[in-house]
Length: 231
Ligand SMILES: [Zn+2]
Image 1 (cartoon, helix red, strand yellow):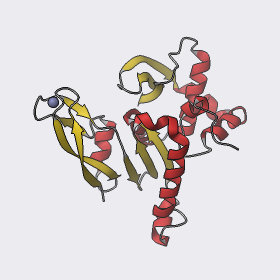
Image 2 (cartoon, helix red, strand yellow; image 1 turned 120 degrees about the horizontal axis):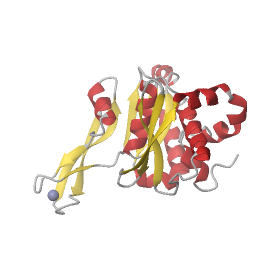
Image 3 (cartoon, protein in one colour; image 1 turned 90 degrees about the vertical axis):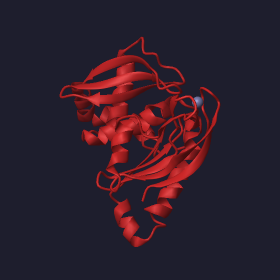
């Protein structure tokens, strides 16, 4: 079941009070249209009845797609600096929903699910896109790290992130975006051959892979955000 709850908001344009139905959980097996909307970047868009300004609620929901093996705690972009607490919360919630503290039938579903935490809309959309193209999200993050080494002028700084936005036969389309506004700063075409080369070189990438997978926030940004998780 997908669950919604009323949320009171203020229109960013005219400051009118608005109530909208904010999603608390998404079941993509039963509502594939919600998955489509996340991929189309218009899920939870709303229009102010007073001034017609359209804006988007930040994500704060649990996403389940049992058929594709995905469970994602999708959180607001602004919460990324507290990712360690978010990882712990998501791990605990998953344990009671589909993990060791869940009923047997739910555990059977849980065994097929990859658990992830994301912050902001571009990040959750990216996870769905990666799965749609049968790519591996850890490998995509390693590819981004490799891209950073090769592009000396990368606009890397807090509040800016690199996201996969499209996949072609031979290219991974990535964009630098401003996390808060989701505005595109720069587009980057990354040959898929780079991804394939990293896949073949497991040994060199093992240390970075271990750090990226020490919790469900699988995102290269955790490598330069604070001291990280104690080993
Ligand atoms: Zn308004």
